[in-house]
Amino acid sequence: MAAKSTSEAKAVPGMPDPAAWFTGYAQFLENGRVAFDQWAKASEAMGKGMFDLSCEMARFSLERFKEDLAVCETLRGCHSQSEAFDCQRRFAERATTQYLEEAGKLSGLFAQAARVGFPAPPQTTRHEAEKA
Image (cartoon, rainbow, N blue to C red):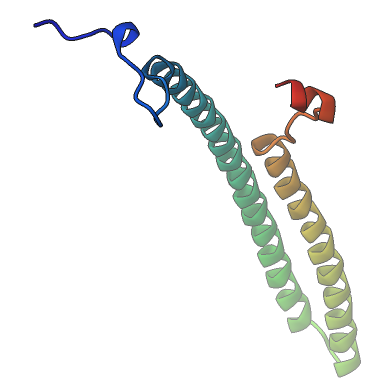
């Protein structure tokens, strides 16, 4: 005996129509595909964003390390405590300014990665949502 096709299947009381199962499943698969595509795009954007952040942090760390070495050389050449204190003060002021600027740069890079990886959902009006 041949199996009944979906179109020939009889509805069971209390259960959804079998013909609707496949329509719903196709929509389920499409939703899954769309979600996966969005996840892949977000992952790629966040990966690039994290790479950019890492590169910027490495660049800044190298720059700061070079300046730390330079101030050590300068301190070694100081002839008085006041001269050494002034050198340390200038170093601290410059380092503080650089760290604050870098924090702003890193925040901007992180925000950019988040904007690219997680764009805002499209805005719909209440009327459009009710029609859908």
